[in-house]
Length: 206
Image (cartoon, rainbow, N blue to C red):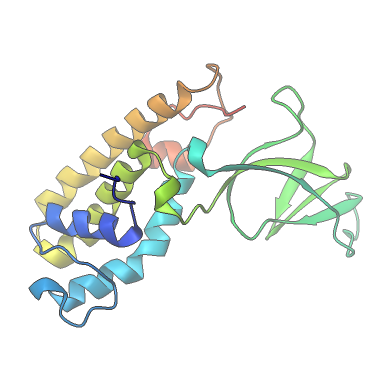
């Protein structure tokens, strides 16, 4: 028997089940198995934002790309020789350079990078919107994150939201460790904002 493919609806359905709600089969159903339609709409509205937050929280191996960026025709007015438009699916930069030992000077300005090197080698986390390609750790973290995001609206419980927040932090820390075991042990640069929210321990990806 073939294994069922993980979908965004399945992840949101499991998140609602964690909160004691009914499962759903679609974001478009008018009466999804007796569920509160407002909760279904809430899940649909939150999905893209929560997905991008969780993808940004770690260097998930299933959401990494390497590209060589070509310079934009509109060069910077001063300071750097080239401007590069950020990929439309960019979530977070891991490294600018062809390998971990190369550090190309650059700056992020708006939705662009500026640098004196062209083409610009970029290793980054991308917005992988296909849950069928995710590993189990990312799926679990996404279910918890959706449950945490919807918790108060669905249950009205601040204590349950606090429990889910703690469980999510632990799940993300564990996922980073498991994800990092697939690669040589190395250390990424500091990400203070992420560290303050989800804790330290984000591995570098080769």
